[in-house]
Length: 198
Image 1: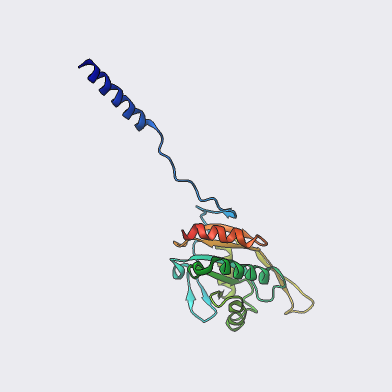
Image 2: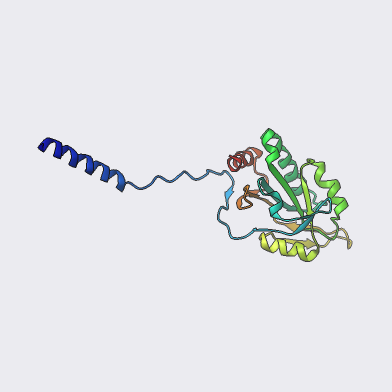
């Protein structure tokens, strides 16, 4: 009887010991780009797409969204970034249909609906161009912490735009998760987007 009692006490102490162990947390996603999970900005926008349809972030729920701010007359970083995103979608294969690339113009004065409709889908038919009034553009820039400013050229219409050269990535619920800096290898974006799609 003593042996049975001793065994029971050992069993109870072992079970109690198990209960004291801290719960194991699920490992955090190991993103290769800058992790912005939990950020309190870039929550929504109200703009018009290159087909004339009003758009907000809710329209893309269920997809991973990559949003880049640029302008069609940008000589270098904008077309380079768009080409990089074309390559990212190519490497994603069938999963690319679960990703939406958005190009937001910071030059509403020159980037008309028609111009965006020609420029943006030329990189990939699935890409969407977004524009707004100068006031809407300024509001979105403020909400997304995107800096942009006009740099005068030799003539009134030949100005350029200095702007933030990075892309934001949102998960399927429309939450901001990543910042992809310009010039990053496509493989890193593919890796991170796959994590968000899984």
